[in-house]
Length: 364
Image (cartoon, rainbow, N blue to C red; front, side, top):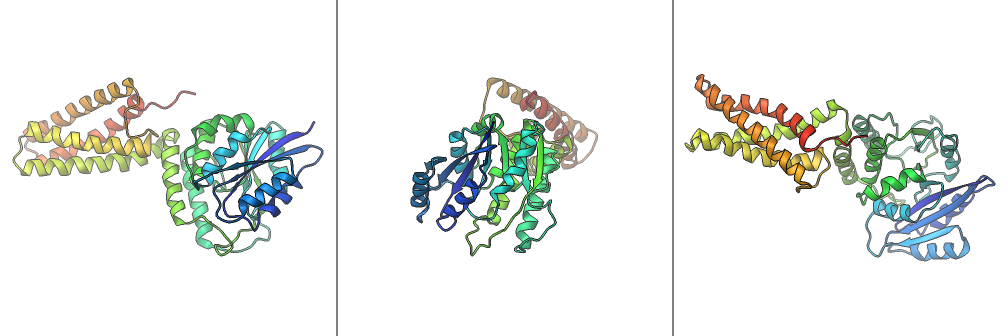
């Protein structure tokens, strides 16, 4: 019995290649594979929409969706995932960089029941290839390396377009997706890891195009991808990576704490005001950084339980900060040095209390 392969084709100003790539995709169908194509036009300003309409009239396997405002590849894929109905759902760019015949290779681990998700890697096959941009390749490999540190997956090409999912897997993940542009790649990889999917990689062919030929990704997308790796991956990252991130978050808050205390102390503010005042200032900075980078929360309160646990943590660590600072000053240590030592204790205490009380890891 044939399986149905749904391929999502996000399209933005690809009138020159859309028809050709559709012909290549349709050639994948055989007695074992039925095809469904979901073309999502992301408000193209060229004739891509008209080309897609013509293809739809010619081939009944094609579904169309249109965005009235350009949103980005990630948004187009979310739309496509909603429309897809195949047994397996994959991604196909509308240019000619990837060969759809490789999907037959990607399907094998899924059909054998060994995998839930299969990535097509551009870096596994050492055969003839077109040589283009060193820094683009370096960025891809660096982002993959960083992603692996947070997901604990040994992937060689996280940024690849070719990602193939069992339908139940992507349908479960899709409602959580938020990234509109190329941040989709690290975001989906973080969720694949979080769901503990069985991930396989297969070597694929790749014929990169130049920026003159229409390539759209740039350095800003690389910066965003790095942020997405941290934002979506940190909450389930191995403990060493969480500590490394919190070293930045907690370190920034500790510097703010120490600086605020120094200013208040220099202004002759009494200890019973300057110590807690500086601590509260640092706590706000710490919280905002945590929710943005470390624990995948928005910068707002989410539940009454979270509010209670956060206030409890704040009170416990605030009291510890005050008594350590005051106690060390009583032992004739300089006030700023005393506060610095209290900040060190606060760094580790805040990490563990917030990690397991305020923002607990989801139970599997």
